[in-house]
Image (cartoon, rainbow, N blue to C red; front, side, top):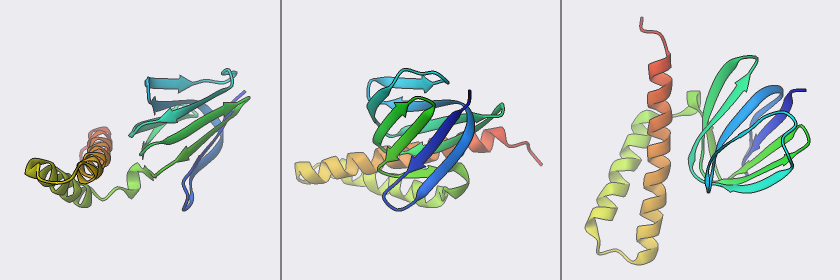
Length: 141
């Protein structure tokens, strides 16, 4: 009994498949894996890498917070933002990481600005981690 998986943001449906073997996500209390016949569940997600195993092949994407709902064989991820590995712009993520680190290094900013910079840094680091993992998996030419 495979899983039906949807990853949805406010802007678009990022991923949908009805023959998924398992899904591993970054929950707020740690990484969790959903397999067929999983108990009903609703939890918050933190920024991290989501892994989907479909027909024995693993696919990864970056999720940047949101919620996970598991009901029967249906897994729904309502993400604040999500990106598939092939959509990543590594140069842009690296620039975002540098900007966020510079903002955090200033330490003159208000608490709100610091929280925004920390969140931007977490998003950039997740993107860069996913890009590195994807690069390592591809065979060398």
